[in-house]
Image (cartoon, rainbow, N blue to C red; front, side, top):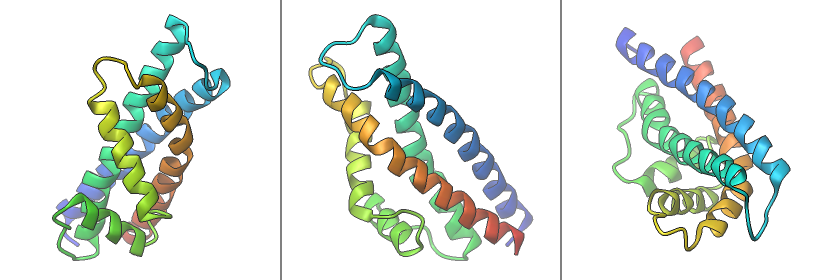
Length: 150
């Protein structure tokens, strides 16, 4: 591994760590609110922060962290999101490719949620899948730390 590849991986690792902390904090606050049919303006603001952080961390994990791991493992980066998810499952970076596909679908719903028609489903999905996303982050961080230490 070159110095620039290691530096890129360390930067991704640091970004993942920071994003994980902020997502976990916001998730805990929203979990305390729970699922409802109607939210106050303050609660909606908290859930908007949660969904935003969820989508950003999901992207970071798939688009940056797996790319960094491929560099460290001297492999070509996968071409599609599906290939990336499948490779991540094979490496033990995520527990389930299918579960992560569901996370990606939720991320897309978050990115394209304009009218608020399905916002309650987005909030529920984010509460449901955040533990899986955080588990994946933990797995990726451990894997990257082992690679960087060797």
